[in-house]
Amino acid sequence: MSALMTAKKLGREAILEKVKEADLYTYGLKREAFADYVQKAVTSTAIDAGLDNADTDDILLNLLRENPVRVFEGMGIAAYLIETKEITLYLPEAEKVLADKLKEIAAQYQIEIVNDIIDVRKSQEHLFLHMVTALELADIAEDNYESGVYVSVDQKTLQKVKNDTGISELVSMDGAKALWMGYRYFTPEEATEKTAVEASNAVIEVLTDNNCMVQETLKRLKQFRNVSCGKCVFCREGLIQLEYMQKEITAAHGKMDYLDLTQEIGNAMCHSTLCSIGQESAKAALDATTKYREEYETHIKKSKCQAHVCASFEHIYIDPQLCIGCGECMDVCPADCIEGKPNYIHMIDEFDCTKCGKCIEACGEAAIIQTAGKLPKLPNLLTKAGKFRKH
Image 1: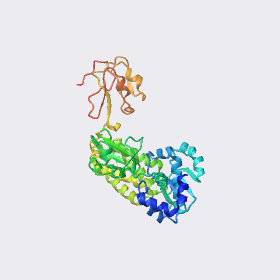
Image 2: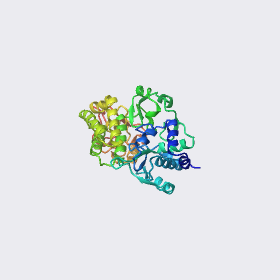
Image 3: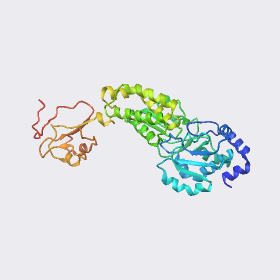
Image 4: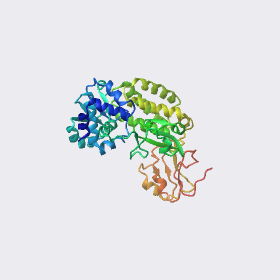
């Protein structure tokens, strides 16, 4: 007998009692006792199932890929509890192949699949069902439920651990500068006091001195902006401004005013956007510029990226004392920005240089150097190898 049939045979009240006994909480950002949530949602006309709108990592989709029938059974149980037959499963826009693969199975449960985020405006009278909660409902109906949360420390594989599992039990804090958990940044000191529940989308990522916090935040803001519907003014315009300022800082065009402006825009987005995309993206930017302000100031004031990640702060030059004019660097340069001829000291046009580093790898004389420091005196005209003098 399927989980859905078992639930219907037991009856609504009996299933809700089992849910209470299991102490099931809604999954994702808004954790609430599921039985209480259902009782408040008895007037809901439909179910919107999926991940949190802000979940751009989509690691929890692996549970749907591996257990589609179980997830659909759980959706059916939730629909039975609120007495509706209207169920929509929302998958990310990029998951059209997965949607096509699952549509036939979903149709058996009268579930419609769409590739989009959940429109909060249209779904105010609907019950939101996280797909992990759906999976756990099926487990409860068949007495297979084990309490816990899913985590991924490699951004690929999932494991289920107890809610009170300490973060320090899951990842090493050695050399950690920050931890990205769920949708927030935590300092190592903060993380040691946190448990696995903080990883609301399963993600736990350790960032070290090799990670630039500005670049990391820019990457995440781009991900948020890519999934935003653009209908909410504060989210749309706020994300544009937040992403622009991060990009300018990484490009060595940052201003100190950007840090205060990020705080102003971020706080406004937290209170004025309707869904988790605007709210969580703002919190990420606020965390970064508050907890790692010194790193931002180093970018802006000193034109320096401590992680040596921001290419705009790095220089690649050819040491005129070492270059023999062999031409190997010219042959591999994809930007065609190296000038030279046989036996003459070659020169890099820094304006067009993409800092890809291929010339460094190709130089057998170790004459091509990457630095974040001040450039030495270099020739501005082609000069025969061995003839350049600094003074």
